[in-house]
Image 1 (cartoon, rainbow, N blue to C red):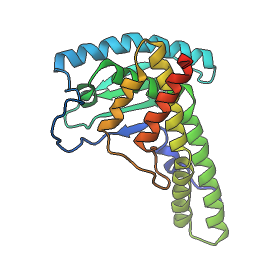
Image 2 (cartoon, rainbow, N blue to C red; image 1 turned 180 degrees about the vertical axis):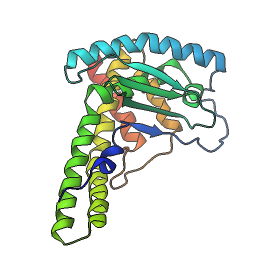
Image 3 (tube, rainbow, N blue to C red; image 1 turned 90 degrees about the horizontal axis):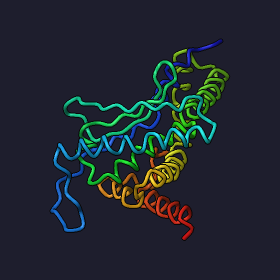
Length: 236
């Protein structure tokens, strides 16, 4: 008996969706730069896109993994959206990278925007969406087969498939995030930005910690990886 798997794998089609909840108000300190004025933030974003996008596309083609390296950068201007960046594919397979206005406004400098853009581009360059789909499908098939062999109903088998797909995809989510951090740091550096300064973005994110089947690694681990990547690339 065959069961539809589109529900089980649909959640991986959006690539990396790192929703960034707004942190609670904190007392300002000299070590934390203030957000840029709206007009400056918009100009900074446009400048970063103009400089990073061609570098990311050349890097993508040099890797030879992704079939389409023509990135499309979009801005989600809906009101009330949290700071967020994501990578997905359109119906023709063209890679799309999206930023919410709140993320653009929250960035403290061009280096942060360049690092985030490089990180999202890296998810596509490394083929993370098809890898997630394959993992989710394998998990769904295995869980569904076990559920069916146990004599469960069709509805219970479908539920098992969905759970199997999610567990399988989550098993590699943290690995994909770290790979995207390293590749994103390299792209930002090649584009003329400072990825270590850009990784200061993590300081304003809630730390996911080291949770079982968590989708993102601890912030400290990610910052350390970016710093190590830059040292390696600079030969220091």
